[in-house]
Structure formats: C-alpha cells, structure tokens
Image 1 (tube, rainbow over the protein chains, first blue to last red):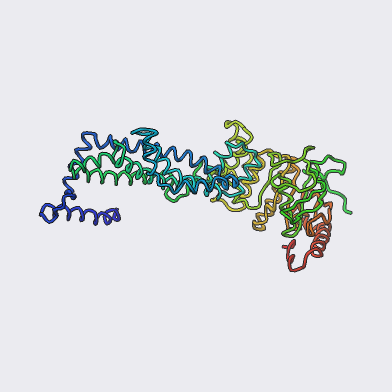
Image 2: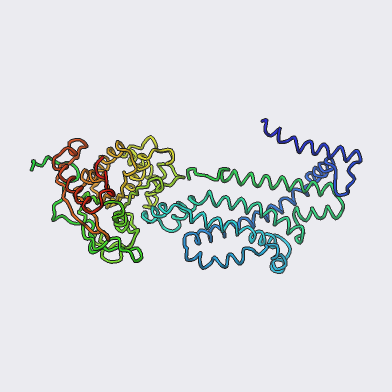
Length: 249
Length: 279
C-alpha cells in the first residue's frame, strides 16, 4: 500500500496549496474555483441526480456508438483480414474515409437524426470504427496459419471457424483496438454535447460555465476525469492487462 | 531369410489388398518451379507407409497435397475411390510444429474436444471420448493444463489425440517427432505404431530419419531429384511388433539402412547429408 500513498503526494499537496492560496487571496482568477467549492458543487449535483443523469446520457450514447463500431469493425475487419483480395479492394476506400474528422459529420448527422442519441451515437461509431477495424485486420492476419489449416482439416463450418478459432486467436489484439476506441468514444461524445447536442455531461459543462457556476463546471470536469479512468480500468480488466487473455472458453 | 515371427497389430498387407489412397502422375508446381514430378504410389488399407528424402525434397509438399491443403498441377490423388478436392476430417494431419497447431487458449481437453465439436458429437458424450483418448495417449493427468504448460512430447501427444478424435481413415504425419529428444521420440514411435494398428488406420509418415522410416514402415518410399520423384520403393520385411532393440539390431534392418543411406548419399552431396539417418 506504499505506492498509492506516494502517488497521492503530488495531487493532495497541489489541492491543498490551491485551497490555501485561494482563501488567502493570492489566487483571484475567475475561472479557478476552490477545491472545497468544487467538492460542494459536485456533491450537490450528485444529490439532486443531475450529474448522474448527465453521466448516464453520455455513457449511453458513447457505449452505443462504441458497440456499433465494435460489431461493424470486428465483422468487416475479420473478413478483410482473412481475404487479402477483399482487403485490396476495400483498402483505398478505408484510407480515404478514415482521416475525415468524425466531428465534421455533425451538421450532416443533425440533419439525419435531429438532436438526441442518434446524432451522437452515429458520430461516435464513425470515430471508433477505424481503430477497431484496422486492429482487427492485422490481428486476424497475424493468426498462426497452422490454426486455420487445423480448422480447414476439421471441416469446421464458417461460423464455428470464426467463433472457435479465428476470434479467440485474434481477441487479445482486437481488445487493444477496443480500448483505444473506448477512450475516443468518450472524447467524441462529450465534444458533440458541448458543441451541439443538448444532453449529457458536455452540455451541462457548458451550461455551468455560461451561468458562471465555476465550481460546478470544475466538478463536472473532475467527474469526467474519473469516468474516463474507470472506463479504461474496466476495459483493461475485461481483456487482461497484459494483452494476453488465454483462458478456457 | 529368417522365419517370420508371429506379427501382432498391423499385419503387412498383401499386394492384392485394396488401396486406401492412390496417387497417379502427381505433379506439383509453385509458380514456375516444379517441386514434385510424376509421382505414382498407393497406400494400402491399414498400411504404414514412410516417405524419406533430404530436406527440400518436397516431402512436406507431397503430404500437404494428400491432406488437401495444397493443389496438384497435374495428376490425380484418389482417396477411398474419390478424387481429393480439399481438406477432409477423414484425413488427419499431424504437423511437425505442434506448438503452432494447438489452440493456446484451450486446455488439453478443449483442444481434443475441438475435433468432436467439428463432428457435432453431443456435448454430453464429449467428455467420455476425450477421457478415453487422453488415457490411451497418456495425458490423463494433463487434462486441464494449457499447451504452453506442457513439454514438447506432451504437446505432440495432444495433437495426436486431437487427430484421433476426428476419427480419420488416413493419418498423415509430417516429421512429427523431428523436434523431440531421442527418448521421447522412441516411446512415441512405439505408441503410434500401437495406435494405428489398433485402429487399423492407414498412415503416411514423413521423416528425414532413415532409421525411423525403417523402424515404423511396412514400406519406405525414397523421394529425390529435382524436381523430386520416387527413387525407390522398399518393402520392409521386419516382424511386428517392432522392438526398439531387437528390430534395430536385426540384420535386415541394417541392410535396409545401408541401402537407403547409399541412395540418398548418391543423390545429394555428402556435406548436405552428413549424419542423417544415424544417431
């Protein structure tokens, strides 16, 4: 238990210094709240449920977009990874679509879906599908050829070949792509909420800032930070931190 | 000739007996390069056929064609009366690189069960079959272990068990014991002889080890030349069951070895063949 304590030295003393200098009148910046005010605002937000509701809304769309991206990315990536010809056909298209900033689709998505979950989840999915797709292609291509030959000699039908051999063999690598995409999903969801979509944590962040509730704004920022941390933790647990998850299926 | 001792297990088949596998006029090319040219042979029912040749002689390519994993450019390969068009559960192949051929995320039990899942054996019956096979091959205690936790010899045993679980009619083995130490190799040689004799599975066994080929085989085919063709087919007239000491000390065994060694030395420059076949 020594290391977490050591690691806490910097943030705790930083917060202490911040609080003290703010109370002593040394820090007069309007944009800086005090740690005590932030905690207070955050506590109030948690109690009246507004913070939790916003969190739920953001997570809902981020996870929906991520799930869509995972299904599409893993399915298409597996096909392209197994069939070099298909990859050669689709490759240039992928390379052309991939660099488009997902955020640029906001006006288009607004016209298609209106405000709400659809607008946000579709853009999150677009942003997340590329890392998953590309990692899946290389993961499937890196599968030991012998295993595919074993599957062929056993005459496994396509679906069993995928679920029993290809996907388990590629899973550890695909999981890396999923983790990268998860981080992206949160960033994109909050961005859309700040810029356009009147829901979720991003929207409330802007609302607090515009109504000069600086403490609340900071509380939401800290909350977002915790959210990202927990999300990453969950995903790394899911896939085994070492990136090698070989357990019995 | 010594009188033939009573043989147990795989009785040497008579010439008239039916063929499990027939290869005629087989030619294999990789691009412009011809690897195998005009190969003709057959594997009789229940026969243990060994194919020897130095490295690069196309042994593995030949076996992959028999497995359906590679396509011939010309010629025909017929198995059980039908032409081979691709891989089939009826023809099990045991790869030399056992560590790559096992699913690392599955236990020993799970690896063997893969064949049963492929055959759609009901889940309730799988355990009993796996247990029986692991008992035969001496892996009962390693059932819940992962391949990475096993020695090379045990990993190869897992692969053999998985191949037996697919209930094959022909067993193809590609230098299966080449990477194992001498003691493990000898016990696996005896085990595989016992297994294919019990189950009456015709076997094609590839090796570069001449003594291994003579020890195991009913016949030995020598591949050589470039592109490779069959240089010689040798009937091995040695009593079964074979014995690691007496069989290898048999005068005929030594004569076969002498003949094979000469054939391959004559075919290849000595430095490329030094030490092969004598260990």
